[in-house]
Amino acid sequence: MKFKYKLFALLLLAISINSFAQVTYQLPEKDGFSFGSYGRVGVDWSFEHGGSIGRRLNLNNMGSIGGRMEEQDYLELYPAFHFTPFKKDDPTLIKVQMRFAVYSQSLSLFGNSSTSSIGGLTIAMPEIYAEAKNINGKDLNIWIGARLYRTEELHIADHFFFDDHSGQGFGIEYKHTRFSTFFVSSTDTSSNVPPYFYLNIGNGVSNIALRQRVVGVIDHEFSLAENNKLTVMGEFHYMSKTNTNETDITPIEEPEDSTEIYLNYPMDYGLVFGTKLITNFKNKYGEGINKLAIRYGTRIANGGDGGVSKTWLTFGAPDLNRVNYSKAYSLAIVEEVKLNLSDNNNFNGYIVFTQSKGGARTDGKAKTYWGREVYNRKKDFTFGFRDTYYIKPKFHLLTEFHYSQRKDGTDNMYRFQKISIAPTLVPTGNKDSGARPHLRFVCSLAHYNNAAKENLYSPFLQFVGHKQWGYYFGVKMEWWI
Image (cartoon, rainbow, N blue to C red; front, side, top):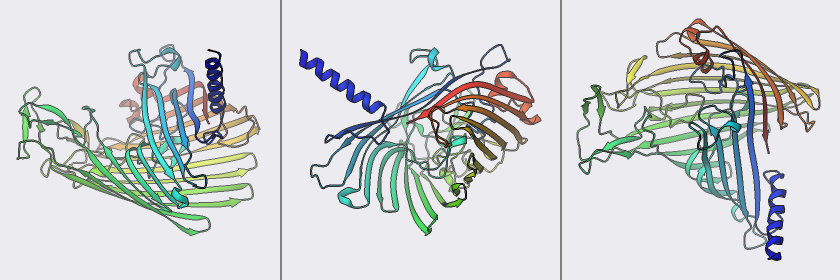
């Protein structure tokens, strides 16, 4: 019995050591365990309806593009198991990585919610994969599983751009070339386009079946000079035709609402081409970096909306005459710069431009395969910056400005401007924009044009009504390790 208690105490000690370690920490024994985390939590208040709003000021369908100071509670935990090769001189690095994400769909606070609450906490598992790196000392990596496979992010807008290939599949990396394949499918029957689900009548009974998309990605990195790297990328998307007994691709009439829906879909595909240039530079205050990314997607690979850039989230409606997305496209351009303006001043600025069109001929709204009307064209543009001033090693002042505009179809242009000021306590005393944890007081003020005001084109406006100005006050904390 005493031995069991001693063993339990040793296990607790090992877990405690790893809980306060960096993500790359590994136990000195043959095999090891590491642990990482990201999270944010806080409260906010207002003078609208006598309480907390909990809604961002940004324009609709833009997500965090336009600033993320008002984002809600969120938690990620990512444990990893590390394995040592049998031969001591084998330099292969082996790990099994998992990631658990926790958030509330109803915008309620973490402390007031649980998984059993209505609209309460949701637990997701975006990562579970195994990876072998530096196999036999060669610059060769192989991984299989579900993975957040992405590199470029605008942190102040919480926007992963250019190469967000997160999903379930496998990949091979050799030196500066990477190849991966993802299998995308969804059982969400509220999805508009393209129809990842369909009515399978092969057995004589209408059943919802799953339609899968396969995405192949390849990219290569070139070193143009000592401080310049160029990446070229290509994607191929493929969706097979539905497997039913019906041979004709014809619509039928749904009697309840008299809208036309399709039971059969032909094969469709999409192509993506992209390039990214990263330039590192120095001034007398330290190192800086500039990133420029351009990406063009065609047909069903024209995704990238709502604050995310995944190309398989197809935008717009199909051409119901051709029954495909042959005329669909999307152009995405992102520019970001980071540099130090002085010994106590860090600057981070960005520009995001996206223009997308679906397969239908119209620029306005068009019907999907399931008779729903969606916008078939959109154009949005955002620029913003964050200035971090180190008043003291433990006291930083964050100042942000963002401007966004968006045009859905033939609607009027929606515009807003926002300024945020966040005095921040940094307990570690690290004069770095990436130092965490942050303990912030956040004050944001936004102004909307008449089109955004009248159409309630913001999560904030949808809560408070037709307002020209929006505001947010809150105390927030953010960490990562």
